[in-house]
Length: 147
Image (cartoon, rainbow, N blue to C red; front, side, top):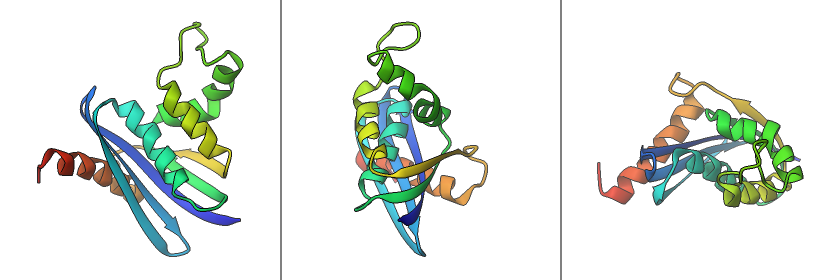
């Protein structure tokens, strides 16, 4: 099974507001950069979207080390998702899970791969995290005609 390292990040101008997601992938010395934009979204949605798009870009099942600075994303996958599924996509407080549409998409991508989820402190100099952040913000700048 191929081993891939992925860094993901989401960004928003306003929350909600103009949003971007970025992903930096590394595989056997090759690198790939992905990013995209949504006009009216939230930072949390962009964090999830970055992971979805990065995993979807992999052509076959892979062993993935996925790094994110979003505790929402990491804990959502590693701690909360199984309970949400068991509870019919409701929180412990019996409220509908926010961003369910994206969590369902992510669930489908996760099923294709073996993923180790890692949290990194954002804006702390980690090169992969800085690159993913740069890509997420580039998506917003390009879409808004800035820069």
